Image (tube, rainbow, N blue to C red; front, top):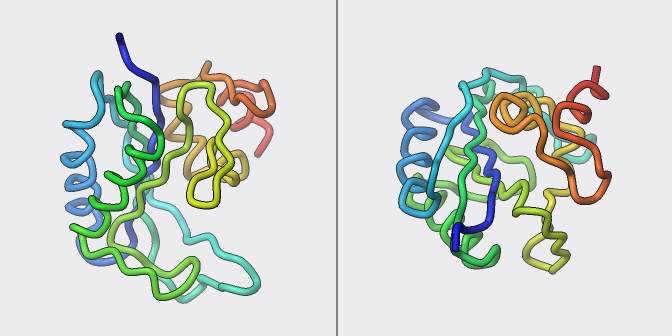
Length: 157
């Protein structure tokens, strides 16, 4: 069995951002076969009216793709462990972070559980996810919209 294709977004805006992303990738390496990584993108923080981020440091973002034999919930457990090992704290929504690992796509699965939503519910609105993902998998079809990653990115303009 070859495994399920997955896309994981990485982000960091605290401390040594490059070192945190590299640690995240090192943690992903044993979990994902055929691991490929986008370039790193320096981006402004994104928040909401309820959780403004204007005073936060800039993010370094990337996307990793590969295949896994893990289930989506098991992969999420590993992502949370890797974040914790890098000192990730969650004092409030959209808080700055040493390392953020988001499961963006899990094959063509659509998962809606209290602890896990796949595809990631906001990835279609996020240039900092779509741009690096398009570097690696522009033809990946979003199982919800039926659009390719490249088309989703182009729609952001």
